[in-house]
Length: 160
Image (cartoon, rainbow, N blue to C red; front, side, top):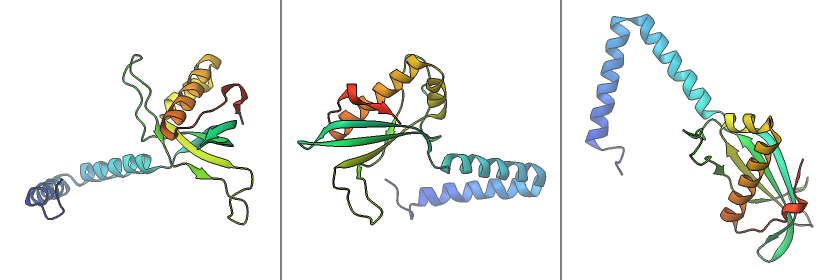
């Protein structure tokens, strides 16, 4: 991995700045449009995930104990859309957390929170069709079980 002091990186950065300076001098309007486009794309890329729905998973087994797991399924632009119908649906998972009460203490009955993110087009398409929603729900449960080494009681899972 290159460091910040890598001469190759510094040279590449100087070349980019040189091209931008030349663009600004030659065609200020084009430079302005370029910068605005980069800012808009950056804003979209850096946007936070957007809540889509929650799966409540009572009677989940985690580390040998029974708990209730809440899976917040979100839409997020950083998750790519699958290139073809035959490609797997990309998903990103967050960090498993314990639910905290108003006093920032763990709740007595063990409640866990987990976030998943899919491309916004995926969550939108799946919200329109019951069969597609079931597929996304099962994918969410499969990913969560594999990633966290938990076992959900699928008959007890509800959308909330």
